[in-house]
Length: 128
Image (cartoon, rainbow, N blue to C red; front, side, top):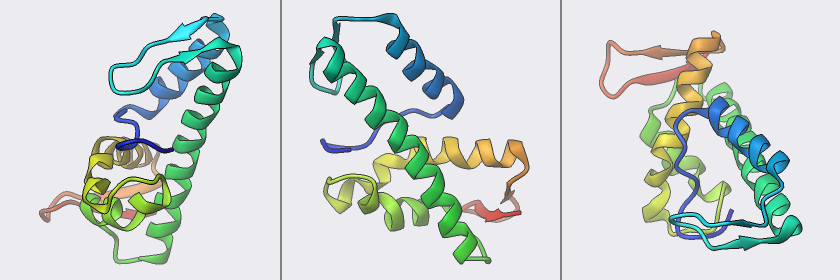
């Protein structure tokens, strides 16, 4: 995903549901606060596909990273290590992925596929 930073969702499932709703809605135009104007079915479908792909790629990258780091990783470490693999923005903006990554991590914890060691600061996430 290109632009100044990645998407800023926190709740993964509602974000994916919103993408699906947009696809079904049949809008002629989407106007976002921090994103350009998308017009026409093709541009809107492309935006939705790119957004969904970002979520799927972020999920895969986070899980792969944690699998290769059995001692776990912090949210900051994940953002700094994976940010450049998700978009073309300056490395100083990788921490802008905090909300999206936290959403993926907490979803994994709630699903039982990840664990969060909250006895340490910062919190360390691991694959189960």
